[in-house]
Image (cartoon, rainbow, N blue to C red; front, side, top):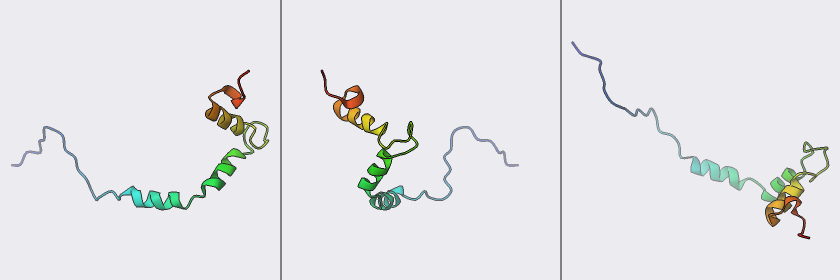
Length: 73
């Protein structure tokens, strides 16, 4: 009689996961960075719908480190 008893851990792999590197590289190389940035900054679903209303100040704040991105006074 065979006992079905196991004490410990096991790692079982069925198949081999593909390397995501080539697919990711192909996807990213097909993106136009300038077009992506223009579309991200000109979204109409932010606040009242004016282009750059929210994203513009956010980017300026990131660049300057100051809320609103304005100059120090």
